[in-house]
Length: 311
Length: 250
Ligand SMILES: Cc1cc2nc3c(=O)[nH]c(=O)nc-3n(C[C@H](O)[C@H](O)[C@H](O)COP(=O)(O)OP(=O)(O)OC[C@H]3O[C@@H](n4cnc5c(N)ncnc54)[C@H](O)[C@@H]3O)c2cc1C
Image: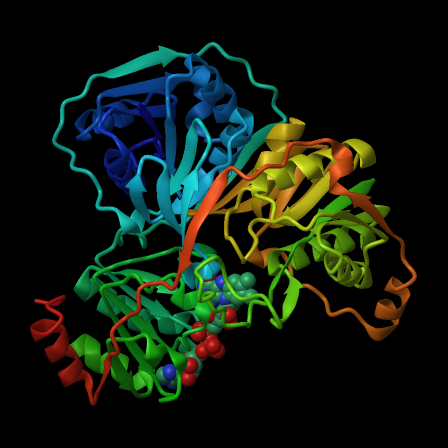
């Protein structure tokens, strides 16, 4: 058995979800390698050197990988895989991994297994279906297993190693059917939603974007990330990438605080692996209270300032 | 220009699903079925493009049993021109779905193929990307904005850290995210009109594909239940519990 993890990075650091993917891989087998596509920035190399648990790290270097276009990576990756020695190909179940891996899977003519939550053995896995309202245990009959990993279900691996990173200069040419135009990324000093220990989210009950300041004060005190329900995002209160839920981010912090969120199944799908859930809602019948460990019925405009002050 | 829109019939998103007692799957008998919400967004986007004059024909495709014909029919009521139903009684995995769609792409030669980024039943998020690989076409997944720019499309994609804009050559595959548009309700006259529109039926066997499933479902279970929680009276009690009981605050 030999496992290949495709690394996700932002040209500076390997993303935490990749570290969780490595941990999932280690549950399959210890013979595990990591592959990076990048323009070869020194930051990435130094970061990759530290990651524990890897037998080998390879970096395929090309200008074009500064933007991580699926078609470009697919071309280089399918070439790399020609040796045919890998039995498992893993990537994080982030928009990066979701965008890329099905192409690799189709290229290899195997059925991808999306978003695994658990590794039972090298061919048996658990994954959520119906927004996590059911869990499917399945066995893959394919020779090569192509898998995306739900990061919140696995602890990130450590960064205590001194790997050598083998850099391969790629001389491939690309067809330009897809060109990168621009990124509009949210800048924030707060922890990433999917990696934060504490998350506080606001819903439609927040009424407008300005009122999210009430959450910011608390988030600052707790070192928390801020999230939102779809209703809050759709109403334009906060950016799209704050959305938590079935179709937004899946989070599993130690503490999740839902403020002015009713608790629709699609929202619950994204939070129910949290260790503790706190719900603050003025409607005592709100479904969110069925999922919360601690519920507080009250007007958020009174509760939040009191909470910030008392923390 | 022609669009192929792929739609899947799924359990309605408002239904609280139940896992079958024998653990082979979830209960689908007597359960309300609807078009996958992401596919509705795909149909809407195609209809909008047609209204803008970018498209002149919208073909709505579904793969499934006879009843998937109803799902196609709702796409036609929203503004699709004709339908194709590829008939099968098996639950096809995404790879096989992509293979079947690729056969329709060969036959129809659409310039643009639009579908939901995921189906809300198995949440795989694979078919569009697999189809792109099989047909050697460029993909623009998780689209929240699509604009024609000369001979190409400029597509804004929802990614984890924010938004990414890419430019793709035609023909291409677009998968839709929630904020691309708000699907319209079909009007009664349009529902009536849709009844006259043609739906071609093709038997899946006619493609000569090997569509054997690769994943064996061992069992389907309820997710682990959360223990019931308690209500607290005020902020002091809440902070107290978080410190002493949950130990998540110090
Ligand atoms: C295909 C699909 C995918 C979806 N994906 C997601 C997803 O990923 N994430 C997601 O969140 N949703 C998702 N949704 C939407 C979901 O169904 C709900 O519509 C949404 O979660 C509702 O958001 P909300 O709880 O903020 O708003 P509402 O349901 O309107 O709830 C607002 C709550 O705020 C409370 N409130 C109002 N004022 C106050 C106050 N002053 N003080 C205290 N409480 C107050 C109200 O009592 C109410 O409970 C999806 C839907 C579909 C169809």
